[in-house]
Length: 310
Image: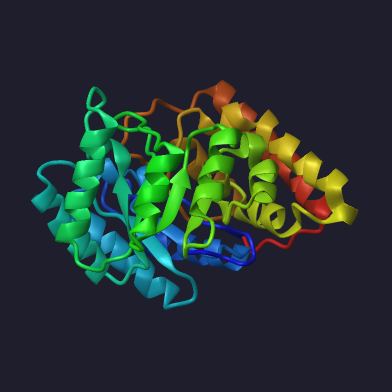
């Protein structure tokens, strides 16, 4: 998923009905909003999707629904590893691939335990590669069940296989990102940074784009940042956007993803706030903060003349 133009890959939410079932009409609307905002791809079945709270059938059905809704407009990636024997993980990777995705994502922390050495992870990655034919793969340094960050040399070795085309980076370390980009240069591969604290610097260093939870509040703002991060005439505005994202990071992470569903409701999306993950409740204080975030965003959006569809 290498892009000559920087792109935004949303980490998709899963809308639920009040009874806990997946709300497919809302998932369709949400997918369309991402596309209308200018997303260059979609990451379905990720942590923001509450993937660990979905069963295997639901994961596949949701992925297929997104792929069908997108209808080839942009590539879709989706998680395909959920622990257990490598042979079992390989079988689900094949099922996800058959759903029509561009790449199947491997969760780094589900291939090796926290106390296991990098060599163990390398062996299991090699085993998974061998058991999944020519299926394009990607990596996600998911913070659950624990965050296992790939060393730049590890990522470079995996990418050199020719099978790894995508990486969602959560290391929060700009120097590491620069090393990863240097060591993977020249390959058909894209690194997408999840951390908005250094989003502009990461894009300038050569990241293919951004893949962050902030896109589940205002995807068009992240697209705007990807489009204008390096424009000399807009550097003041770019810094204003980055500071807005940094300033509001805490409120956007509190009781997430419940809080982002509430924000999308305020935008007019027909989405419930039901979540399967036990993240807490929307307190009056949190609601007040999110209402202020919405007002501040609306003002910023107006200043930047950003078009929105909902």
